[in-house]
Image (cartoon, rainbow, N blue to C red; front, side, top):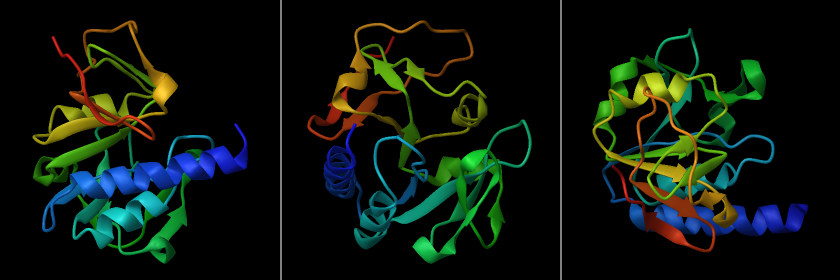
Length: 171
């Protein structure tokens, strides 16, 4: 994918994400890395829409911890090529305060099965979530069928650059 296409998709995702969040609500998001859909501008758009944005912090093999996004200058390099917020660390159950949880995904199927990178951090965290679970993907990454395992928690929605917010059929 060319840098121009990636940037256009990132802009579209930022606009779409800002359009689905309500001011005063909490959103769990992530900092896109490498070729993942989106860019840090998505985080800025959520914050400008009035949301409190929490970002994942990896500390051990359990569920994710969370930190508040206070601006792009508050992000620091972390293990595994990730970027994490500096500041106070919130416990894993902070995800329960989020009305929306934006999840990185390599693909998602029409049943809501999300394909991640395989480390299981989100799988261990999503059991604590109470808000709408949304996989952030490219349009072509919404596929008919993915393999599922017993520990996978289905998501109810996909957010893509051209498709916007799409409800998925969960079983």
